[in-house]
Length: 541
Image (spheres, rainbow, N blue to C red):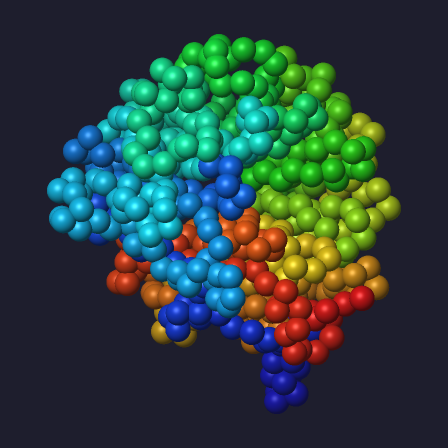
């Protein structure tokens, strides 16, 4: 019996060659940057995105607070933007590590205004505030940034999938980035001046705009807007509205939008199509391909999920029409046969093994078993042997993934959010994996995340399951307090302009006693020198 117990113990800790190298504990203020809520208007940010919306060379942090008060009504929603700058430590950096959205009564008597409307000490206002227009709509429930009009400055897409009148139809606002954007921005004024428009969903309950995404699929230099609506139609719908100038344009329903546009319809009922997106040249044809997640798909097992990949050229014939996933003859379907794992809930592409080809990560936060549900897993496919080539409609088994990063603990929902980024200023992409329901000792539901460094082809990870617990050899990130749900959302970009990707997390809205709801880590070449054993966080040649 003793031998059996020892065998079980070593089985649990040794399948991964990855052991603890570094810990970032936000309870110990290990974050590089944090934002505090607007305590005078307690509608805390929960969704985040990064993009340079004022053209100054720094990515700005966009935060959606869908439950914030505007129009004297809760759940109207506010979007905040904190301008980026060379924040950090050392020569040439500005030592700002904390920004408070709150105002004082000496600044303004209006509690809905944030400190972003006032000077921040750097010869500018602190950022931008955009209030929702209708009570109950939850403006800011989803966010994305991209250069929709091709002018070199990021634009903002804002979703409010709970839009009322009729309830749950959903609406997406597009707001043009510009060099003089700052302070309080009025949506009606922006529309009049040709700098904003909105798109309204089709039917009650569609949740139009639940997920937003940008990529240039038709290679015209303008980012195209991808809109996921998991409640629409039979099992979710995805709309692509191709980039163009903001003006002349009129706000209208999605089916009245000018051509070209594309609509994807789900293959099965309750598929939740459009829950996850990824972009990049996976097929090697030089164009952006599109990956779409459908975690509720039950084609091979109940709620096992499915991921669809469409080649860049395969989208072009459908620009003015419908793509029925039950009938299309040109897609790669990555299929799961594990019940309830909900694969495709999150997707990301990046060069994880530094071979010049994009690899694909697929989040399955429902993975587990009958007694340990929702442990969560992330699958990674290396882009070997033209694995993503599309010659018709074909299936690729998710079980054939090269790597499986898994949780040993139940109800963590590992893989709810994932992303690739260049965190250590080195060749290739690093992988961040979030478990927003992670619990660390006395911090239940504080949330956890891991950053796993990419490898060269000769040293890359493969062939085994890697259990990402607190002792694993990766950068382990711990939520600050019980209930924070760190990793509710995450985003990457260069907030402090040093050329490396920074990483920001949001948490559960309103639980943190310190008032924090956004935490950031600045990428740095210093992470190349972490002293660990071979095969992870090290400097490979």
